[in-house]
Image 1 (cartoon, rainbow, N blue to C red):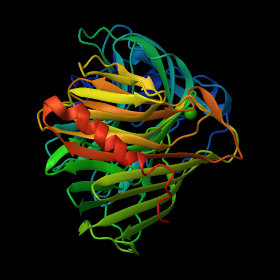
Image 2: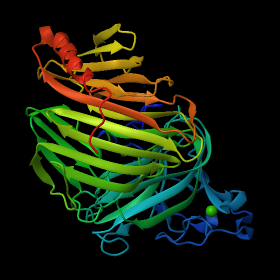
Image 3: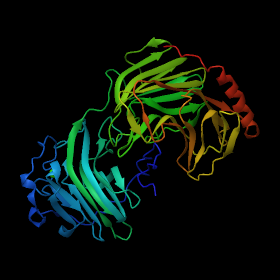
Length: 487
Ligand SMILES: [Ca+2]
């Protein structure tokens, strides 16, 4: 089960916060944890990093002072020596019952400020779950203490491979992907297990739970989003994903989703880490180095949140670990061109890199593609969670019968010596998500620039003729091959 909404190598996606709401939080009992009930070993002899965060006992060096069982028993929680630099850690072992530990309530206006964003990090070690699920999350409460929302940062299931210590992180508050719901008066940080019959089995260790203020990536004078009407297109650029596309509407119909968690742009999956880039903030943030916007050819220092133009270009330089990306997204003449130049500051092993993610609507019914040798690949979307096409293409297209609209994605540039693939991930009730997948289980070498460029062109067609229409659109795109976008 894809419990956290992230496919094994899927670029994806926490879905909506509601869909993603985790069930690891039955709130049936509350009792303060007494230090004396924990098992202490020799952690006092280990040097531990200075506490700079907002939680009083982030590294469990004072046992689990400041943490509350909700629900749980002393026998399920041990503070033990974590070896190395860990000092004391907390070992959670539900032993066939529910278990949750959480911080005392952090009140908005006291410990936390309403206009401030925060980042919470934790070191986690998964020794394996045999039954149920585990979540690193937070809860938001109203003035009466009623839970308004659970926000999940990291999840484990019985399918998750055991792993050594890993840092996992999340953000909340204004300007982040997790604004607090209206009426939130307090929050807590939580680690919990859930199983439908309350039979949770497994062991997870936790250390260094650090809560700090966080400054979301705001660019001076820039709004949090830019919605642009460009001909028959309406597109949206989103700050929380470090400035990617986040909507494609065509002639008033949404053909590509605007649902936070269904990311666009480029993302890399690193061995033993996971995804970094675009809206994936669970491991590390993409670092935006430079950002520019040109509207009808003119640089705009302080863009409006909503504008109408003939030509818009967003130019970005960013860094994902040792990968450097120069990205331009431009829209004009009812076409969207996305151009990425990728280089590595030093050889960088990856599971894969996705460029040009497009979360097309899940009502899309059919696909069609022309592979590099000229053969056609076509079929219907059935919601089987398969990766359709999965080979290099000159172009590919989707068709959404309910709206009578579709879109062609024509590959203008891609390295000829890499086994890159066009994929559409067919996820029912979520999306038909397009990816250009590269560097499958490879190392990106240093000293070379890799260029990827696609043009996406929406079209309208009756169902019977859509494939001819798409093929005609592709012919018009072929003329752009070899052209260099204006700088
Ligand atoms: Ca510790």
